[in-house]
Each structure stands twice: as structure tokens, then as C-alpha cells.
Amino acid sequence: MSGQGAGGSVLDHAGAAAGPSAALMMMGPGGGPGSGLMMNGLSIGSVDAGNNNNILVQQQQQDQGSRAPSRYEAQKRRDWNTFGQYLRNHRPPLALGRCTGQHVLDFVRYLDQFGKTKVHLPACPFFGLPHPPQPCTCPLRQAWGSLDALIGRLRAAFEENGGRPESNPFGARAVRFYLREVRESQAKARGIAYEKKKRKRLPPQSDAAMDNVTGSTAPHHVLPATATQ
Image: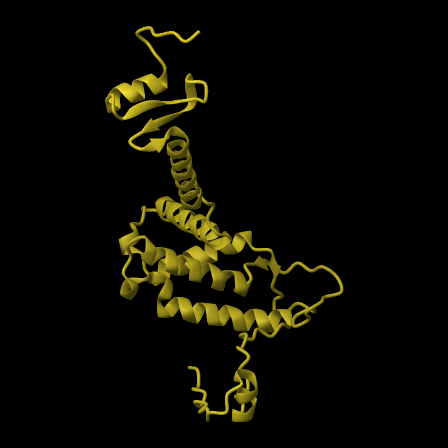
């Protein structure tokens, strides 16, 4: 039984709002009302399908926007929050705009108490041994690689939060010299040589080899490789 009360159905309200010529009931084979409804020349089925597609696209865009940040971005945010807390706990509290390279060094030395890397003292019998045979009482420090990566993340976070590159305290000369000293001292104390990874440069291909790859007999000119600074 199809009621015709004041409430009506959703489709009834849609047809009334669009006007009498916008919503027409499709007649079935027997002359009775069919299962389809026309609105502005489009069936309700096609309209619903279009709406569902739009909703799906919006959901995908929201999912992409709310996707979890990368591991690097998450770590950079945590490091930045930790440095901000250090500035707030500073006596007297230190504003970010007044932060210098010396304050960065104080922060890095402060982190040494949480280090997990054994750095042998010159008087230690295991000084310079990469694999000491037994434990010793030498202090634990932050590894040079961890400090170098930390300073890199904070340097990027400083500029992302409105800092000017020319006044970036994490790129100060004193900070660079300190990291170099830590690298050299830890290399000697731990017997580990820190070497920068060099990019592998592919040898230039000859004209004949390039012809075999491209299948062309036209002459090819290989530009000389430029030296990297």
C-alpha cells in the first residue's frame, strides 16, 4: 500500500522540488508504475551512481590528505618538539629567534647523557678496538651518525617553521666543526673509519653500444662527465 500522506517519500519530495515536468514515473509493461524515475532526463540510477562516484573520489582525497607522514617526517617532528622543549626549559627561557650555534652545541652535549654508544677514553686498554673483548667503564655518548642526522633534520625543520636560512643556527660553522671533531674522535676511540658513501659513476657507453641499444646508426655524442663538488 503506497501512502500519499503529507510526509511522502524521498523521491516524492525530490520530484515536487524539481517541478511536475522534471519527475515522471516510468510505466511498466502492464501500465503500472515501473521501477525507474526520470529527473531532468536522467534516471535515478544514473544520478545515484554519479553521486557515489563523487563520494568515493572525496573519500580517496581525504585518505591521501590524512595519510600518516613518512618515517623521516615523523622523526623530524619529534626532534623539533624536543628542541622546543629544551628551549622552554632553558634558564632563562630562550626564544627561537635568539638561538645561536652555541645553544645548539649545548643541546647536543645535553643529549650525550642519553647516548648508547661506548666511546673509549685514551687511557682505556680497549681504545681503538672496534670489538673490545670485555666491558669497560668508559662513558656512553651519542654516535656521530645519529648527531649528524639529528642536526640535518633540525636544520630543515627550522626553515620549515619560518626560520631564515642565513640565520639557521643548525648550519653554523661552530656546529659543523663540532660534528667533524666528534667524527674524528669517535673514529679513533672506536677503531671505526667513517667514510662518506660515494656515488657509483657508470662508465660512458661507446657509440657502438648505444647504437645496439637504440637500434639506430646515427652518431651519438657522449658528454664528458662533470666532476662533483
